Each structure stands twice: as C-alpha cells, then as structure tokens.
Length: 514
Image 1 (cartoon, one colour):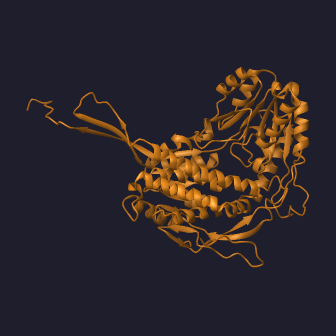
Image 2 (tube, one colour; image 1 turned 90 degrees about the vertical axis):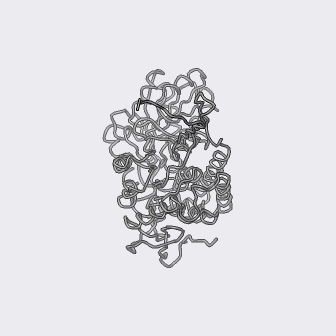
Image 3 (cartoon, one colour; image 1 turned 90 degrees about the horizontal axis):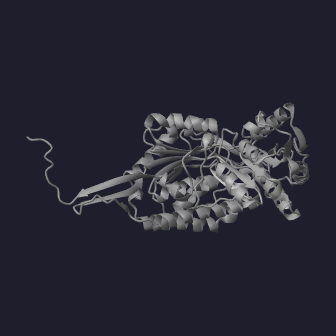
C-alpha cells in the first residue's frame, strides 16, 4: 500500500484528496483545503481537503446506493464474510502499527507509545466485533403457542450511519463506531475531527485494501458546523453516532430529531477518583494510589473523556497524598511525543491551551491553592517554544461551586476535594451533571461494592483507573450521553429488530358476520 502520509520537509506539505466517496479519493467540490498542525511545534505537516455540505450530500448518496443494492451489496453479504473482512482489517492495523502510531502521535500530540497502544486497541475492537457477529444465532424464536405459527425475531442493519468522532482519540473512537456498524451490515459516512483527521483517513485506506465494497465506507474531512451539521439532519441518514462535547452533542440531537433518527451520543465527563484512607494503609498501597491518580488525571495531557480530574480524598490522608502527587506531577517529562523519555505531550491546539489557562485562572480567583504547574513550561530541546505545552497542574482546596470542578477542562488539571465520611464521598462524587466514569479506592471489599453501587456513572473502576474491555459496554448517566458503545450493546446500536411471523396454516378470521 502506498504511504499517503505527509512528513516534515523543507517544503510545504501538498494538499491531498482526503474525501473518500464511492471508492474514490477526491478533493473538495469547492477546492478548499485545511492545514493540519503538529501540536508539538505548531507547524503544518499535512494539508487535507475541506469538505462542506455539497461533499457531504455526495457521500451520503454513495452510502445510500451501497446500502440499497449498489455495488458489492454489503448489507446482504453473509455474516461470515463480513467477519472475515473485519479480521483482515485487524491484521492490516497490526502490520502498519508503527506507521499509524507515529501518525497518531503527530496528529493528536500524544506520545508514540500511547499511539501504538491505541492501534492495538483498534485492532482488538475489529477482532471483537468480528467474533461477536460471527458467533450469533440467526434469530430468536418466539413461541406463538401453535405448531402452525413460526415466529422469529431477527436483527437487520439500520442503514446509512453518520459517524462523527472527536480529536482526542481519533482512530480509537472511529473504530468503536466503524467496526460494529460494518459487522451489522451498515454503510457509513464518517466525519473525523477537522483537527486530527489523518489516522481515520488511513483507516479508510485499509478498509478498501481489505476488500470492502466501494460506497460502503465514505469519509468527508471538514468542520462540524458544515459537514457534521449536514450529516445530522440529512434525510437519507438513518443513524447518527456522535462523540464529543455537550454543546455540540445537543445540536446533533436537535438536528436529528425531525427525522426521528436513531442517535447515540457519548459526551463529556467530570469524573471522580474517590480515595479512602484505608487504600493508603501501606507504603506500597499509597504509592500505587498516587501513581494511579497521576495516570487518571494526566494521561494524554488530561484530554480524555474519562479522565479522573476530580480527586476526592479522605481528609486524614489528604496532605500526605496531595503533597506526593504534586511532587510527582511536577516531574512529568513534557515534550514532543516522538522524543525518547517524554511522558506527556502537548495539548492539541492553541485554543485548547488557552481554555485550560482560563480554567486555572478562574480556579485561583475562586480560592483554589496551586500545588504545582499552572503555567506554560520553559522551552527545551524536546519542547519547542511554538508547541502547545502546559504543565500538569494540581489545584488544592477546591469546592463544588468552582467552575473548574463543575465543568470539563480537557486539559492537565487535577482538582482536590476532601471528605470525612463514606456518605459524604458518595455525595461529592455524584454531585455532577455528568456521569461517564469514576473510581473508588479502598481496602474494604464491602465498602468497595457499596460505593461502586451508589456511584451514578456509566463505568466504575475499583482500585484502578482507565482500563476498558471491548466486551464491556461504555456509556454514561446524565449529560454524558445516551446509547452504548462496545460490547453486545454496541453492536445492537447499529441494528433494528424485525419480528417475522409466519402462519403455516392460514384460515379465515371471520370477525364480521358478512
């Protein structure tokens, strides 16, 4: 396969035809383009097509034709063949792991190692949905109470799916939508974030290489206010799956409502990491809890929807815990993700860094105590002055009325709140409009089960933070969204149930005397 990735040179990167419609790579109808910046230095390393509503209409029409009986007839492809194609894609991802991991690093700013792990997880998602759909029974028989009646519930693809993904985990989030959509027999149009589209473009290339029929997979690179908005409202789209912020998610839901489309929304999080004193009873346990709190808050510079940005710590261990946490956070090595020894990369854009700075400023104005960070780092060899770096920041003595505690920062900022009783810990953790994820740390098994059961969050980790399983469902409560990804429910989102009722011995009903 030809390497379509642009690399840094002394010359300006060339524009690419990054719209894939009905099996062809195209430039935008308008001819518009967008530079893709490396957040480590702010320099462009690629130029992509900037699609709009016209390009979106062409892509949806291609997906509609492919679903309704066009070339390849993907919806009617036998399940075993669909599963085999997904497994081929997983193999191609493994083959291109290094190239794609590097591209994800340069696109989103994360370390290369994080990028490699992401590619492994993407391959796992394709394998999981291949195995899941291949192992399913062909239908569920419903007992109609008569040997003359055959009644069965079968599952069929929804149709044309509009998939809209965020900038923080571009390829991983795309795989959580594309793999189940294809496994179920749907066709789709995907709109990656206009900030980080490169690995999604590469995935569409791999789908074509694996043998997916033309028109089944389409991509339009472009902004949300044109491409995303048109996808959400388009009359020929049957399902919209969106991952992103709350404001954009509500707009997607509103645009999809007149067409009564199926909608899945994975939105924001303000995730509590609740640490009880008994979780720190030994030096080893204390060290583990601190290490995991760092991981929860600062992985990928906090640009994670499930980031544990709210540390809720028992008062008796607060000072020791926060002091050690701040000491270690200040030692996190910032820099370009491709440099050896770097532990944390830049924020994805200048806009995101400015947003983070505004949150920290508001917290300090409202009485928070800065324990570390709170500023841009000094430039260095691995940290160009033009990059979007921000120091890992710990804000102590926070309370629920602060903006930084209520709203999602999506940056390397950890707030600290304190509790004295179990009931108070649960109340603090649940005092949020969101309900995506959370964690509880305790050596008491009974307490762990009690608190986990009381937390109103879609995923609850006990004595851990951040792991996920493809087999498990991923969703949230409150304003964290509706619908589920991953697991059997993730496949079900891309299907409709049909009840087939067959009367083997039809006879007159004779409801009426005439």
